[in-house]
Length: 66
Image (cartoon, rainbow, N blue to C red):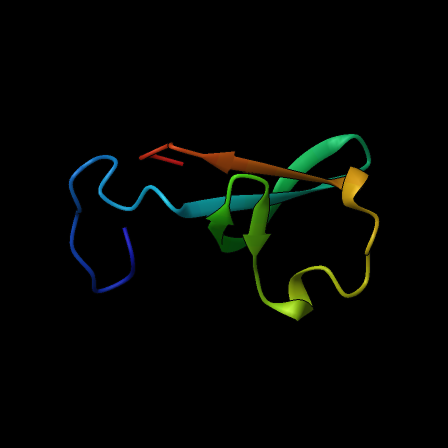
């Protein structure tokens, strides 16, 4: 749910992704993004600028309640 927004139907935004970054062995929320192809996600540059190594990130798709 977005602040001042409204609840949406589950799976009504299938391209929306949850980007997590590893910190001390734990994956924590970093940013959102959008799935633009089978293996490609686009997100804002500031989300990955300080840590460009993709092994430090995890992408979650298809979840309704995060």
